[in-house]
Image (cartoon, rainbow, N blue to C red):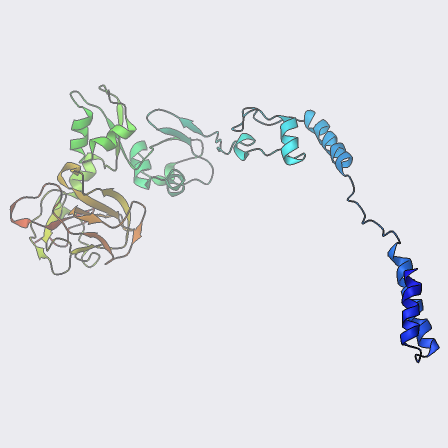
Length: 348
């Protein structure tokens, strides 16, 4: 044996080695040889969950087969239970819109025509809350329903609601959409958005961002309006004020093109016209509504810096002065500054 030869060699060379250490070494060698051939235990194999998973899938399939989906027509198409189970292990992914109808249904609102609505007044309603609910001005509700006293609206009363702030105009003999647009100084495209192209005598037309003719006459009558000196500031600092009143109770204030135009008072932006459009000769314009019921108008702007719905502070820049629209004569670059509901403080 190999081991005997090894021991013989050791004994011949190490005769001086004590017997006890030699026996210890031999014992360790034998122990190691015994354990070399012992079969090692295999690591535990991963359990087979296939049967367990299939049981879960079968149970879920049985539950789904007896269930019902709200709104069978789904953006996802017809759901296949088997395919869904394979992909999502028993869970079905359904878009929210296929299960629930988010549109609010209100029994006191009835659709009429041209975007008009009929609204039934409820307990606790007032003109302000109704106007806010539909995103239009209080005056729009008043004008459309000939309300003389806001305290007279009662629960159950039917009110006509416009799709946009403005007025309703009854078509007279010979009138067309273009002639109505000119009469109220609004863009034809704005009127066309809310009305049919063909109109007849007696039809009701929605005129966006307009006021009744009677109010327009009063608003532009100059000295007959209240004097609110100190409420407004000049829209252009150090501009040349021509001071002559003309259409829309307005004066022209000239300055270099690009000069900042500022809000004459705190207010809400209710209308904006693009400088690239004609806009009845006003070019780029901005209309602000103020807390005291007045409005200010800024036209011929080179650029508008605000949008409808923005709230601005007195003295805040809202536009760059320009000469867009119909501009002629010596005024050149200027702002057409109009005031509705009060005297124009820049008039001379």
